[in-house]
Length: 479
Image 1 (cartoon, helix red, strand yellow):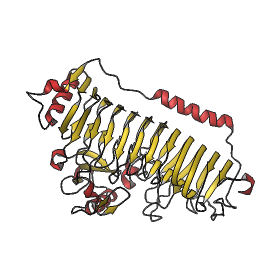
Image 2 (image 1 turned 90 degrees about the horizontal axis):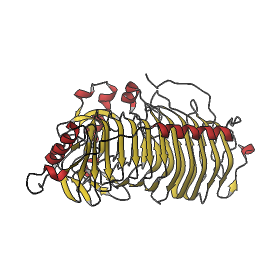
Image 3 (image 1 turned 180 degrees about the vertical axis):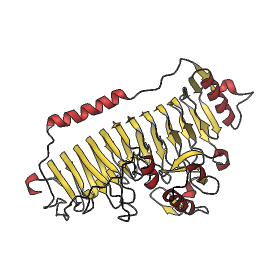
Image 4 (image 1 turned 30 degrees about the vertical axis):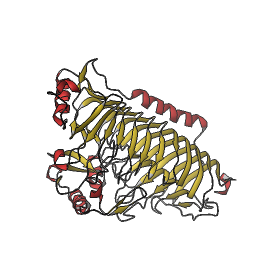
């Protein structure tokens, strides 16, 4: 099943006005009543109730039981033995006591809960050869045989990473992060000898040429950094309480998973592409009570890139994001940009965001190369301190309008969103003339201290009910 259908609809154009509100948008009456909005959030409660948590036998497998003598300097084999023993016994907890443990990749098996007690610190050794042989993975939404993620699970069920300890990815030690290539941002300035760019360009060609994944060998010599924790084709995944610090690449990246819960996790990483949590092609996902202090998007919902995303054709859907704090990042709650498989049924509520480096609070990024059907998105009770732009939907991301896969973005409701200090603009909403953004509604939203007019281009059916920009209430009749 594929989600690349195209619908040719007439759009309309509206330029930015003095307070950022256009005078000529298409605004057919909305059918959204308070009872309908209640039904939307009842659907969210049902999704939450249907998310299955893993269950484990009440058995502990202390990691120290698998030492042969004193604690080894490299605990890779110790972790592997403890996880295997727990799995073969029918499951339980592999318990990591307080202390520092150096290790290579950790591969989880079904029915295993890797539990870090308070004071436990698992530090991954930054030697790329340790993360071989290559495994089935995704990199920027493209399928490859690449370096093992630091924590990896492939086709496993009933798995967890829990506790209150710290996973340290050693991303800042000048091994992984320089592979990004020459790059400068607020927290780092990299001028490396290695560069991922040649392999990245070749991989994109392989994707478009439909080269089988088994033949896409992008490990040693390609400089494509691994994710921190990637469950791949897994069911019933729990990540709770732990801290992920200094990841080589994306931090928590579930791919093709069902029933994923990420609860009370701290994401601390300011390296290049340090996305916090990126569910990709996943169904029934809960992300709640988490704190994000990251060098890229805090949460980015994805579904595969370009030909890979359309070929697999599995959207990310039925996602709940609640009670999260975004201290820093490129975007707070983001959809895209690897979005070719589509996204639907996303519910975001009670989140706080605040940083002068936060570029966008709510963002959807795609283009006519990536495409994607993105619909049924609900946001409420979003409080933002400082941000550059509050709400961004951009059909011209990165490659711009250079393809033949027009995205569909429709059916969005944002209610009770408050932004205090906007250094750029409140809104930047840009569809295509031939393919407008459709059916977007703002209710009880207030945007303060916006320094520039908003941008609205090619939108079909936008409504604003009690919305202010810089203290000026927007009259719906003026739209």
